[in-house]
Length: 430
Image (tube, rainbow, N blue to C red; front, side, top):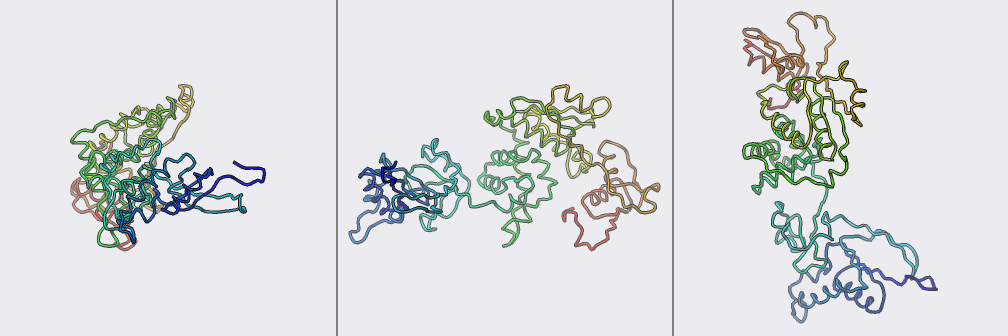
């Protein structure tokens, strides 16, 4: 509000300690609209941390509690907590300020302060309110009598494991849930970002572990193995279906989308579209879905039942998969458009090896690794019994090929690589 002099009839009090609260109450009782700004999630300041006051040795909370209640309930006082003052402009009686409000990740209109969230939170931290002498959970209230009576989540930054993950899976979250014995909740958390978690629990290159802070002390947390455990638990104990988010479903409104190819990219897109309320249909040329996961990764590394389980979970989200349906002369993009598909995502993959471009590359007995693994994946018989096999290259496909050759009965199989052993790009475990 303002008057004829141009002065603004409201006051900003910066700091929600006992002094700030008393100032806000005095101003509000005088008729001023008062804004009380506090950088922490609750008002109270240092006095809330004290047991006794000096020199009377009175209980500090007994003295301050009425002030907390009066400040929180006063009609002329508006609390702005968990916020910082960034800029002030103007002159006496007419200031403009810029305030940065931090996200609490809790809806204050819905939070009742019951504390049930704390009981299920798997993460514990040092309590700043107790000067590190006690612990609190990741979701917390500064102290029992805190005003506002709303819980807060501190999000300091993006964990290095999550930042390194191409899918940005909440690794630290599901590791914490597993620690608390909440294995199904951990599996659900992985699925929020990754529709193929059982697969990744076996063949992911786990860059999350390479960036794990624990590795600076001794060894990284075994993130991939923990993910595999959680998903194996889900698969063997049966998955409890979660209630679907109706608001999320409103985004797609049942519109049809065609996805060409059922490899990791196609399945991921279809999964996300289904969760957003679209009706995705996946068209796959092969007899079974999975793409390179099905025909490019040896079965000893990725058992078909594991891949089938993840695909089943994707289908349960509402994804339709049509196998033996290649896009070509018999089914064109125009046909898809005429069938009512409003968008098409092409994820046909790259089922070809990189050629060396040298003489003799096309001689009998020379095969390319991706094609070799593809033939095995679709069920073709390959006889290596008694043969000597040389594999050129040092990536995971090369290592998969040399190990597969030995499993097929090769007398000897070895890798030819142009650099040193330490520079081989394949996973160390392979």
